[in-house]
Amino acid sequence: MEQDLKRLGWDVDNLATPVSAGDIKPHACFAGVVYFPGLSQEDLRHVETLIIATGIPIVGVVSPECLHNDEVRNVIANLCCGFLVEPHELEELDSLLRHAARLGKLQQEVAAGPRNVDVAEASPGEYEMVGSTPAMWNLFKTIRKVAAVDASVCISGESGTGKELTAQAIHERSPRAAQPFHAINCGALPDHLVQSELFGHEKGAFTGAVQRKIGRIEVADGGTLFLDEIGDLPFELQVNLLRFLETRCVQRVGGLEEIPVDVRILAATHVDLEKAVAEQRFREDLYHRLNVLQVKVPPLREHPEDIEILARYFFKRFSHEKPDQLKGFSSEALLVMRLYRWPGNVRELINRVRRAMVMCDNRLIRPDDLGIERRNLPRCSMTLEQARDIAERDILLSALGRNHNQVQPASKELGVSRVTIYRLLEKHGIPRDLS
Image (tube, rainbow, N blue to C red; front, side, top):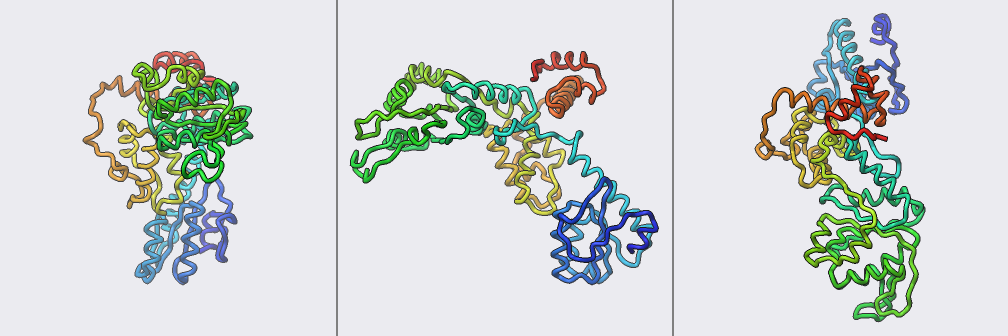
């Protein structure tokens, strides 16, 4: 077979001996052949691992007897892009290999871009904040600005939008990046433990205080303390936090010593603090102390263009959890995700994608695998012009995302002038300041 393929012009690497995926050097046009007759059970397991690890399109050659072997049948059905049963014509194998090679080349091009859906992540240190829309660009820019100063920051946004990730990104870009980052959920602590958790206590301060405890504020000395769901902090304890923000000193429960602490406070909430102040559920003076700088994390429905990018990003991140045959999302699944309102925002998207990856029995994830029922999707009709506008806006945003928001290379990629790009930005309400 090797000699026959060489005569047909194929550059053949014979991997008859056991090799690892790292030994294979794929190039621009690459495919593989597995000759199944005579393989032992151990050989089959090695071949299966190799095919999965390399991702190279494989053509299988089998004997009629091989097709009675369940393990061979599973490998061919799930991992091969085609197969031939002996005896076969050499031209048939050549044709299948050419199809496989074209497929392999296309897969490598899609993986490398530029036509691939880009994961336009924030710069290193901004963790897993992913997006390529104006809403996310503005968030990334705001993070960089507020990180440069040492004032308190109030981060607002719906549940699941990534407020803690935003806080971590601010910390990582601040002068305190080398110091500790501590997060505490004010809504998850019993009322009688909040003060001890934040400020600490001395031994014997109350029943059960058998030893001294250092509070979260004191532990974060030199670094950043993130107070999640600050709106759930009991009203009677808010004055203690206000006093710390004014004096920058803590006093442990049961203690008399004023302990100076240098820590930056970041607070987050999903509730409207201004409304809570008006209803006297949150202290106005504490609100103004915390709300020196503001960061608003947009809900997912406000930047639906990022849904596909996020879905593909998390599919890749959790790929070790999926069945081998699962390759991605169907077009219908991507459309349904775009139409869905995502009340749980990015957290819900992650959960649905991970669940679909585990439970899917097909090669592509479908709407049913995501658990999104079509009858729950908004029904709306649109004109052809509206559909064109949506497509035009998506293509424009994708091009800008691939080119780091630079107009000149984006216009070159789309084959239009810079003036046209600026006109489209204005038409679709996209900010012109994309730096």
